[in-house]
Length: 433
Image 1 (cartoon, rainbow, N blue to C red):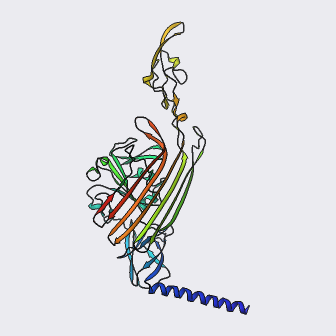
Image 2: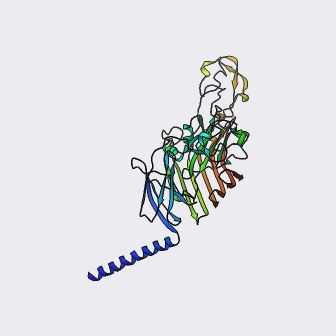
């Protein structure tokens, strides 16, 4: 027993010296690990709070429990700046190595200092923006009662969201509501998301996941002066998280069931998986990687309403499904009016003329209801100095779904991809796509 106690004391002493030596070595090299927790006035943890070294490039963000931790290559003393939308900025001076940093942010309802970038392609106060902008911050997106951040666009003032398919949703503004709004532009970090062959963005096919979305800025009025004629009805800018401020591994798995009534299809699983990994290399380089996969069973269009009940109005007994030879069902193809044929047959002892059409094919028999959306993106960032950053980003996505114009088009394995080179300063932005 005495021998065990002696060895335990020696082991504890050795661990103590190792920790002390590592701490001293880190401090001699100007590196220190800072950890802590951010809460609000009621003591609840705050997620997504930006923690940045004042005057430097290093930073991180708090997790869902309000905790944060990162290594700073800076000698004491230094200042940390804590910012979050809806809260007053807070600066904390760190003079020595602390075991844990506790910070409480206070609510700030005045939005004069809220920053937007869509109006002029450079950061500016929302109140000084030359055009009206509606903004969904990361905090607002988390508080919105919607299945995803993209569905939350329907709750923005002046925005209507048309759902053409499980994987294809179209935002509209200014009253121009249609399932393929060619005059509403959608960009991700300033890059147009439209599919080159169709000329419209296919929903969020290659857009960010909920793990990587920072905010959404929507211009409900014309933005064509800055973004071209495709933005005459408005635009939405999806802004992603910086790998310098949001590091580490993130993951989510969503699972649900649709078609629970079993009328058109059996109940089926709707699943979505997403992974994000971001890290910093040294003080200048940072990278991030995103991957997501969605699979589900789309709803089925099977409305059997007769669009031409007056085809043979002289014979009321022939009205209804299965009785009317000129039957034109809503979700049936090949039985339209332009296929009308007049035939004369013997009916009730008399020669009568009837309008007859082909029976056609039901949409539910032509379209595969299983849809998928697989997407991947990666970015590499380099801090040239405090106010100048260069980056390269690549996005690719593959999707199934239904695209609507004058009629419906089945999208099967459509692939969209783009590249972006960007040089961003405090007062300018240069992009090559």
